[in-house]
Image (cartoon, rainbow, N blue to C red; front, side):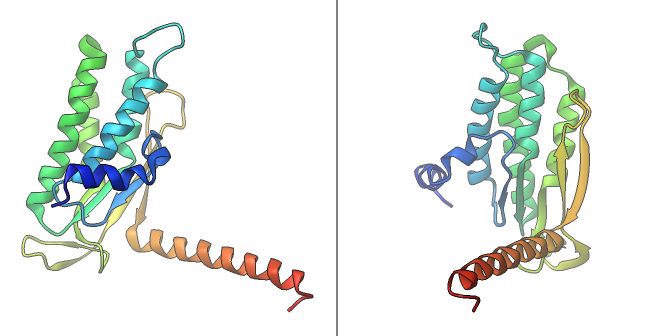
Length: 196
């Protein structure tokens, strides 16, 4: 288990990203959530800032709700153990909910809480990050691929949109982008040396 001090030291290496509400993070061996929990804490601080108007010292509840949901919707995790997955989901929800209630008070509602629970059920998986498959209670691969959801607020209101991607598809598209970058860089360098 990684200590809180080590977690924070590692996350400080990508500090700017951890402080962006919409920056996505995937922990492929999340355990009970030490890394993703700290990422959420940092994102919730950013959500408070983004939902506070310059003249006010307090966040606008409806905007904080939106920003905080976006923060939790950008965190993903995989673990082999179902107990860890449940604990991770619960820890993330409890941290989010405590902040949600503190900011939104009487405007906090169960519909939003149910939505966050659903998002966590789609974002924190019991699976094997090496085989890219979901696993059963015996930690054996099933015939089901790990499928992540991308969440967005495209309508400037509280409606969310979801697009699903298999983990394998995400990895292969990352490799395609990397190859395009290498090819493009190689072409530029080749031209500088006289075409080859």
